Amino acid sequence: KKQSDKSDTSRDKPRGFQESSNGLLERQRQTTAQDETLQNFEEEGDFSEEEKLILQTGLQHITLKQALNVASENFRNHMPMHNRPMSWNDFVEAAYRLKGDLFISQNSWANACATLGRNGAAICLLLTDQAQQREYKPVQKTGAYFNAMINRAKDGELHLHNSIFGILKKEYGEMEAA
Image (tube, rainbow, N blue to C red):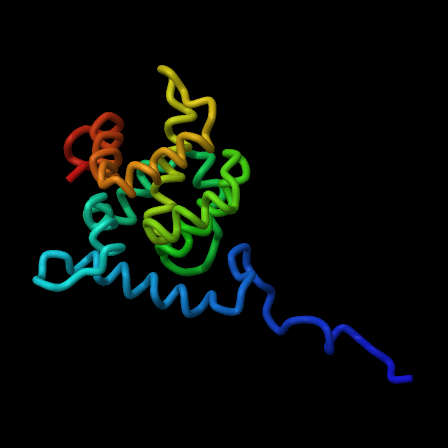
């Protein structure tokens, strides 16, 4: 009998929370391409129905700095720590880690990613976290709130940038919101 050790069953590199499928790198490349499309929205171009839906939410107007400024301490505690500048992938990873605390199912998260992309899903989760923590009428059913946001996006009625800018204006005044 051949002796077995860890080297024939273990991975060279540990998988992260979202690296559960072989297509992760391809999806990340697609998300990066989608993010570039959003950033170049001002240029003329043909967009797919999915891209038009994302553009209607105003996601292309939200910077990583603005999203981080809106993030609660609870959200920031879920951020991965690396010896490099923060990226949108880190932001998405924090949202993914936080989703269980907010009782948002994997199915709801996947639906949000399919509808709005990973960054859009992360912004929706960030806003759900903020809604749960507000003093006046805090959200009790975070899963339902999150799903309602995704449904509004599908109907073209979700404006993420207005929500982010509103929180920034309330917290920091008009200087940070711009």
